[in-house]
Amino acid sequence: MSKIGLADDGVDCAGRHALGWLVFGNTVGLWLSLLLIAPGWQSGALTYGRWVPLHLNSQLYGWTALPLVGWLLRIYGVNESKARAWGTAVVWAWTAALAMACYRWLDGETSGKIFLDWRNGSLWAFLAALVMLWLVLAVSWFGQSRVWNRARWFSTAGLIGLACVPVMMIAAASPDTYPPVDRTTGGPTGSSLLGSTLVVVGLMLLLPRATALPGAGRAGRWTWHYFAVSWLAFGITESIGGGHFDSWQIGAMLMLLPWAWLIPRDWKGFKWPDGSKAWRVAMLGWWTLLVLSGVAMYSPGILDRIKFTNSLVAHSHLAMAGFTTSFSALLLSILMRRRIGSAASVAIWHLGAFTMIVVLVILGWREGAGPEWMIVPAGWRHAGLAARAVCGMAMLAASITWLKKPIRS
Image (cartoon, rainbow, N blue to C red; front, side):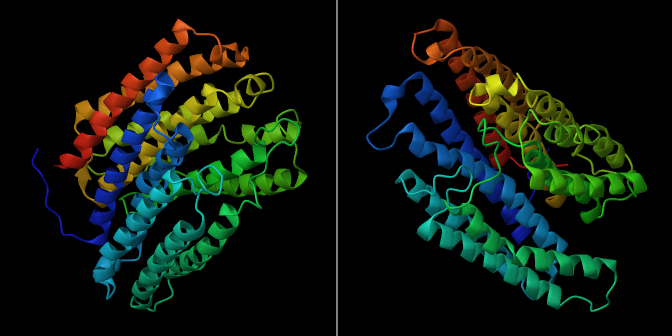
């Protein structure tokens, strides 16, 4: 395989920046795992809590979001429009806002909301990047054909929806608002989990269609009807409220199960590019495991034991290190027309992620049995934390190779 040299457009720039943020986030994650083993390595105000937002947000707003930014630039044809010179500028503005926020979070300035730590200057810098992205997309949209076909209607609806994001971001990051929770236990509601997952389902249904892959998919009319009914169920159960002991909230979670089969079935109807199979198969595997484990963990008796333990940390890594990383790498392989990572590095990543998840599940289950695991020195706990750090090292090494050695499909 040889290195590939592509035009320095916004899509490729977004891909390179995304991989850079993945390496940065993995580096911080490794440092956090080492601090759990040796808390004395904390230096002054640079405590574990100060580093956590950098790890979480660099993975979400860097590694996860920037491939979506590149996807938007491709969908709206920015590189073929009058705004093509601004595609790269948008990506740099996004990275600059995130870098500024990392500095402020490390300095202790945060909203206190997980994944929504934006506050004051960092919030306004990120909003400026969002507005800049929207303007570039709007300029490109305006210069396209004025024939109002289905693609034109969809792109218009997309612009309208994206225009709401900055306002929604201000509201979401405000300490005065908070996501729905079961007030009796502090756990999540089934409806909130259903709604957030349906957003991901929508992206998976959209991916092969919006990237113009050959084929028609196998979703079928009933899949789209079920998608609409699922959103209706979300609205109803969200308005009622409740928690994981209520039948309607459990029912909301159970509605996720068919998607473990429907998405792979739909994707079989498309012809995928060479070099994407490893990430596609991995993503579908992680997706199935994510849905099945999420529904099982929401069960009364299980959620009560693990909801504030490392077992939920394990599920977060299943979602991010497993499923989301596979989705982002698959998307980049399509957008950048290159295979992300060698077969060996991809295998190392997934093996490291899976091993880490298993270790965290075991730690969390033991943790849920009683608080003494944090008080009484225990060899099994230190062994588990050490294994987690080793997995982090392997995954960091793999991600570095993806950034340094992009290869042609």
